[in-house]
Image (cartoon, rainbow, N blue to C red):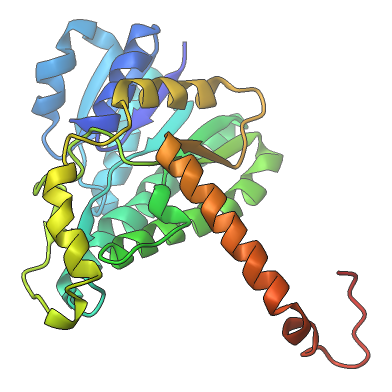
Amino acid sequence: MATWFITGASRGFGLEIARQALERGNNVVATARRPQDVEDVLSRYGDRLLAVALDVTDKAQAGAAVEAAVERFGTINVLVNNAGRGVLGAVEETSDAAIRSVYDTNVFGLANVTRAVLPFMRRQRSGRILNLSSIGGFESAAGFGVYCSTKFAVEGLSEAMRAELAPLGIQVTIVEPGYFRTDFLDATSLLTEGQIIPDYAETAGAVRQAVPGLNHAEPGDPVKGATAILALADAANPSLRAQLGSDCVAAMDRKIAQLREEAGTWRELALSTDHEDTKVAV
């Protein structure tokens, strides 16, 4: 029996991961801004569920939630950094307050929770950390530039943590879902900027118009996605990155092809900038 600590567990991926982890007999610390929302759905699992109030942007509250988890279950084996939010609009259209708010949750919030959990995982010399990135964590798109930039940051932090924590028995995996039928495109998760600049009508503006029609019509099944995430947690040697959804796989293939083309086109320019005495095998 493992103990899971899941952020953003009141709905979407977080709730479904919590449900499936409990179904498998695990303990689950399900955190949310409104823990009663978790209790209302998962209370039948009794003492194996601990619903805790957590706003990930609050460092002190993150520490208190982790302490409550360890006090109740004695350990944390799996951390799922799932809490997140988005903003829709061209980069120029997005206000400073909106940018900072999304970074506070998606980047600094993830860091708050991870730093609170790691002392316990280091002490036990074991643990799994699953950081929820996105299809936008490696391929950005008009209208979602700010959101995607936060997921690029999550990927950078996670890649470094994987190198830092592997010798301590702690494994880090970046989970990159495509578009799933969760509530992410709802107004409660996705802020649509009020400022509209006409020059972006054919790019970010077109995305802004399309998003309402995509909500709850996405290709990904969140139940299957959560099952895949549990499989990653169980894997003996999980990869650094794991894509979820056919749209995400297609985006990955497209981005890799683009990178290869660019690298080939500009290879000689790149190699021309070394000092004459530099000898690096390429």
